[in-house]
Image 1 (cartoon, rainbow, N blue to C red):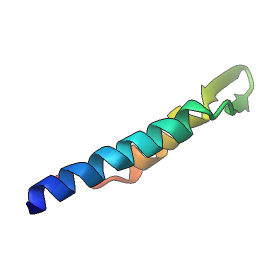
Image 2: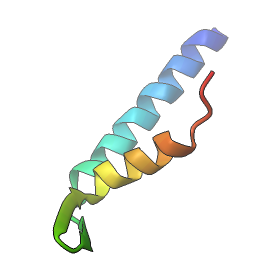
Image 3: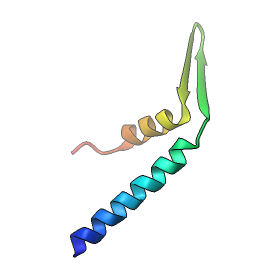
Image 4: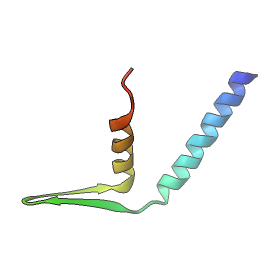
Length: 56
């Protein structure tokens, strides 16, 4: 029963995150001459989270 509740919570969280991410149209522009890098805000957030996630 406890496993079922965890699975439902994880699925609800995934649905909520996908709804929020789907409506985000922002982007980040990083300029350092002569280079110019344009990323979606969602990709930048994922990269920042992965950069600080512990490797186990």
